[in-house]
Amino acid sequence: MPNRLLFLRPPPLPQTEDEEEQRKYRAKVAAYHYKLSMVMLALIVFTGWALSPLGLARAQNVKPQIQEALAPVEAEVQQLKTILAQVTTNQELNAKRLTRSLSNSVASEMRFMQAKRCKLSNAEEQERERLWNEIERKQDEYQELRNERYNLPNCAEL
Image 1: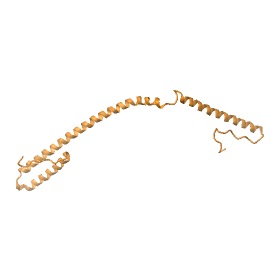
Image 2 (image 1 turned 30 degrees about the vertical axis):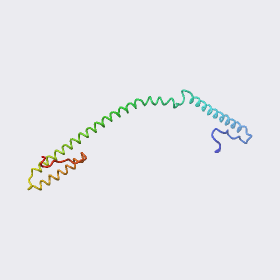
Image 3 (image 1 turned 180 degrees about the vertical axis):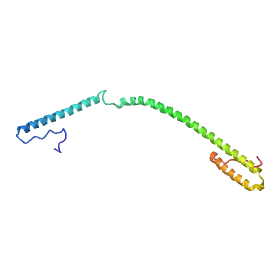
Image 4 (image 1 turned 135 degrees about the vertical axis):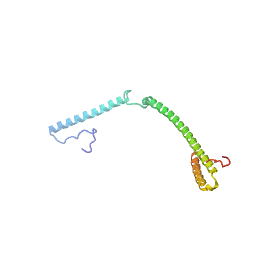
């Protein structure tokens, strides 16, 4: 029976004269015909249902329904994009303001240190050197913020 495919061939004919075996064979053939007709009927009913307006969804019918269902989601996504753009713009403005404020603060500190350095006498060379190193460190900070060095006024300009 391994070579017998499901529902494609009836059961094999018995090679006996026994009436009981023949009755069993006829019952098997009847069951086979019944199964085959039920499968065919199910296939016909399914095909009819699938092709009817109530049957399987067709692409032309589904696309408008999907678009209708996605319309509120797309509107919400668009709204979120607008909000995100506003937040990004505000963040960029705040970052610029903060950078400007920090760089002005660093520049003010450098001017203060330069003024203090200018007031020191030549005898206080160690303190002048310390202030100069501090000013250089502040110059580095300023350059990180503004991508340029601060034009520090000389002692005559202060």
